[in-house]
Image (cartoon, rainbow over all chains, first blue to last red):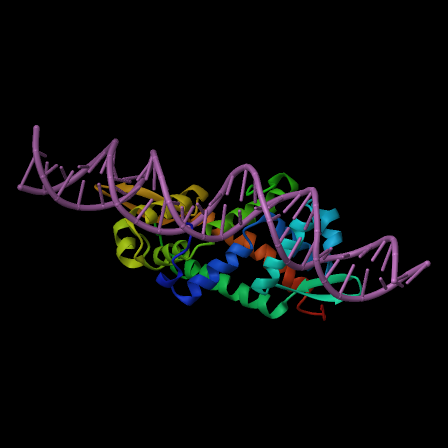
Length: 112
Length: 112
DNA sequence: TTTATTCATCGTAATATTGCAATGTAACTA
DNA sequence: TAGTTACATTGCAATATTACGATGAATAAA
């Protein structure tokens, strides 16, 4: 049915899945990496950088913005995007929470 | 067109996106957490635990297996799944690589 | 051998995602 | 004001995902 049954899961599970979905496209990974390295970016630069159409980039930027991973501020004619630090730290925390469950349960003893 | 232009991106970007996609569903997060906590699991238990149909769970398990995050071994009538440790560590490494770019570039100075 | 159990696979319906051309909108410029 | 620039939004086509009933395959028990 193409619709996820979110009511079956915990808030954390849904949040983690939603964040993972935001990262689940190489263009969005590339945008985030570009942002992390150059502090900020604009749509036009990314069109040159990534080779996708302007409309497509804009759509990916909107997704990242809706999730809260990035924020954009108008600078004259163009829009400057940058990482949303607080959210980014929260994301790191959630993923590390998952990874820690592995490190705490599996690394020491022989599981499977 | 519903098809990702993977050729525009690096291997790492595509790999990270593919892994994120595997985590981009709360049922798969729940399965992984259950596995991390109880070392192993079988389809039937997850049906009870998650409340999704058996066919649906099987499909999610297959996705996780195809990516390499888990592995399954036949135990009589049932199939026992468990975390694939090596792959899991690799995943951790890739995500941490992304997170580190943030920690190295943003945390110290005032970016945006 | 028949029956039950457990999981995988198939087929299908509903919905979501990806990508882009075309168009809309807001701000700067002459 | 008219034109230009930089993005956003809309509308659409192609493809992917999610979910589940029905069915298939393999093992164990009677």
